[in-house]
Length: 557
Image (cartoon, rainbow, N blue to C red; front, side):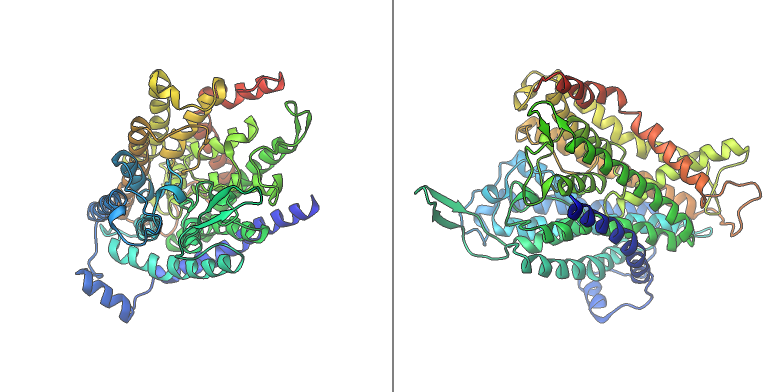
């Protein structure tokens, strides 16, 4: 137990120490005036003018066109993978509904998987299809955050920068080098990286067995750093070829939270207020740590079903309960979605924390870029409420917060929540969809609620008792992923455009509410709990909360 707590403490300290340092590096990269020879050649090859400034509508149009193209290309790769190279197992192409769901999933940084990678996808599909989108979707998150920060920092300007330039720099100077280093570390610690065909072996009992292989380390590196989460193998980070030892588990846990934490300080440096970034980081860190303590306490408590202490079902003994709990909280807080244990087997209260982390809007660190810009929506709302309390016009970072910014903030916050509740209600109302449930009662409902929360929150993890590979679930979850991603991005870019056009005051107006101190920390935390958490309290009472009380009576589902 002591060793586990030392490991967990090191993870939290590492995130607190590395995030500001990496944030400074990101600020320097995206603020570079010079263009390298390779970068310039890349722009010329693609016909891009990196010096062309874009307003928020041009920026959004470029972003949408890039992501739509990515969905189309990935869809075609998956459908026709049987005709493409690097397919030693001669796997057939995916069925169109599943291919569409998967293409949307990886392009939106969700990485929801209604398939098992080793039995459904070729090496080409994994490397060229999925891994490419892991880089592209993470870089897209960078772009939106940087555009928002530039809009806030601008002074009476309509320009937010150049989407293509931001995309290239985020990929070339941040994601690629970090992923290369992490892939080497993972491969050195036993994660497989090979193009060999699957191994046919015979067990000691004389039973033939197929052992899957593949270029996993390179994909796992970006899946964690880019908060993508989609596993090379079906059971994700619980697979011994994907996460073989405590050291690989430790490194990957840090990788999940590293860039989301750094993005907070990137944002703070661009707007010129690092102290404000520390307040935001503190709120994220508080919710993350509180969630971990809740999950750990629930998972190590007395289990009335087995009449023992600890919920061991669905967990790997090489990681233990504590490290499984830490990963579960980190992956649901950070919009990652990878797992090293089965969330479906967690205790009801632990499952509640996992779902709630996602339902808050993936703002507790969240995805690369997306966690911070999602949090800024809550910041804007908090500033508005604070302004009302002090009796002055709301002001944020030297800009007046007016009707348009509040409308867009509320839209970005409530749209994913609406999708979660609406699709969950529709799904439980349809008889045919309930056949996909692996469990009945409140846990079965939680499986559906988790699925649509994960899709709309662009997380990708699941209560895996739900068979989601049906036409209905593939389409419904695909729609949820699209709205959950771009239904937040577009309001954020609209806010950036509106704020960019406003004159910025370097000195806050007399009586304006400070966003740097402990009072704002408490207010922001309160708004997140009230607006984010209470939105879902009624629906959670008939899911994990009800299941918890029934479990105490010895009832299972």
